[in-house]
Image 1 (cartoon, rainbow, N blue to C red):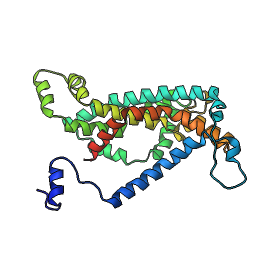
Image 2: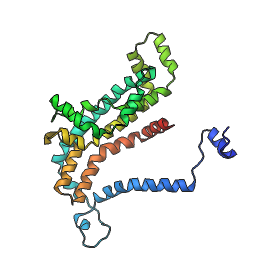
Image 3: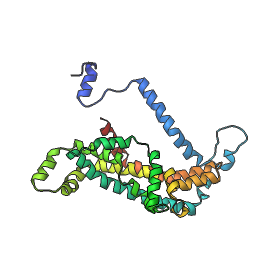
Image 4: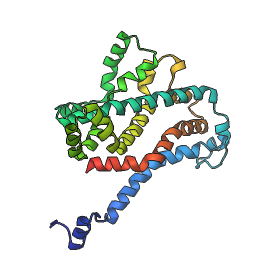
Amino acid sequence: MIPSLKPEAREKVQAGSPPKGTWFGRIVVGLMVVFVLLPIIWLAYSSFIPKEALFKPDVTIPVGFTFQNYLELPFKELIRPLLLSLLLSSIVAGLQVLIALPAAFAIRAGTNVLPLYLFLLSVPAELLLVPLYGLLKDLNLLNNPLALVLPFLASPFTVFLLYGGVVKLPWAYVEAAKLDGATNLQIITKVIAPLLRPEMTAASVLAFAAHWNLVLYPKIVLNDKNWATVQVALTEMLQKDPNNWGALGAAAMLTSLPILVLYALFERRVTRVIEGGLK
């Protein structure tokens, strides 16, 4: 029984269909969506605006369409950072999930370290830059691409996300596997991993996006331009010609394609996992 709801709304909730939001709530959500999408829409639009339209003397919205901004992109300067970011972000995303899965299983099995992970989630990453820089210096890993991999292998967020999936699994499967003589490694690979595939996919996508969007950290630990990531290359373009909005917009759109493709392919899975974790 849900006494706070009207009879018809109570029936919908009990049937698994939540009551629809009010018109005010829909307006608020719609405005929030507009504010979130507006910079992205402007970025996409500015990448096709001709230079002469951007620098008109009269104050009006630039109007025009051209592919010239994309044709004039310095692909030789962007292709290496783009490939490097693709490689490093893919490695980090895969290893994060590979390491987080046993950790999530261990927490569910009784290892009492969940409060530690929750505490680490609340620590701003900026606070770790100085001690991490000193550690990498002592290990002679500065100006080394490993500096963009090793510190990101253990992610509290990825562990917590996979733990939310492990908690929902029928633990009877694990107990049955133990009775059959399966080791913890066999349980993780043959029982947990197949059932946790949606959560692992969502965690991989989010880990890839987070590593792909790093800007400050790569600039600090990698001074060699040969190891510049795609976001560092974009900031250098911005510093060289901050007024060339068309070229910057085209470069930003080009370098955002991997993230856009990933979210287009796995958007439903990521959304379901995040929604399931909030319930």
